[in-house]
Length: 415
Image (cartoon, rainbow, N blue to C red; front, top):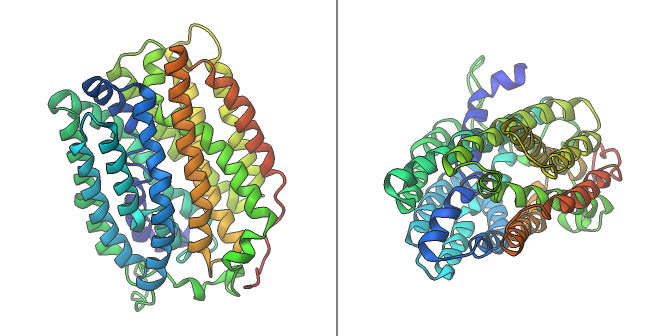
């Protein structure tokens, strides 16, 4: 644990950055806004959830832009400006009107403004700082979204009930400015900055070209990665799982309401997702440091199958609903932890930002497609029942695909 303790301040800042960026806001609160905004504007659930398609469209621009900014200006400057831009764009969601395209455009702008706070930024900081306990460090960092998921839905619901959904977006926009930005300013130093005094926590992430350990010799270039069988297996596997988890998470409150809970009860129960996300990320982080990462992923990605089978039953009790949410959350927690770890191990760190960003594009599209598909299922049948067999097939395929990945290369060559 020495490496974790030594760089604890970096972990705190990066964890806050993940938890108060596009990885958590708005994904974990959209389902809370679905009812109020749809009622005010007369939208169907599918119309509301179509907004999630604006995210991958924006990421098409934001991902390469973010990678270029990271290479040119470094993680600290990109993260600081990114948090400010992201906060302003979240506030912009409060300006949505009855024309759904205003909501879609606001989310599209948000996705582009989030170029500096995509997971690429935070995982690059961690991958550049940690070596021996990289998996655990990634798990702790990415659990920031789980921390937000434990209180974010309830906070949003409370503000909506007290002051309306427009004020709720403003309150959420203030969180990155008041919490994450000061922590990043204090604890993330420019790459290549002087080391801390002996015994003090090191807060300057190492530049990717100077990594210690097995990746110090370089890594695959983007073109070589795109020609790799592993790249496309990872995209297919993580994309399949993201389709199912995206559909469940984005519609979580409507799903729970359809099972007989009130909106306030559903928002509180949604906090279970955050706890399970944190648990999944921490356990997966520890496990992938010790065992074959694709095997760990295959087990984690099998858990939603159990959740889907429970949801296919009749007369679900609150305890059973908590179990389903926990199973889905654990898998979601393991997902991006394992993705970031595998990307660094299989393809190296020299071109990590570009490779990870390109991989995020189809996975983000799959996540949004799942949200829209689940919404359409509910609109068409007044129930989510038809979604659970889809989870069994698609998520099951994603879990099996992990087993087609081999051992990581110890020293990928740059080409």
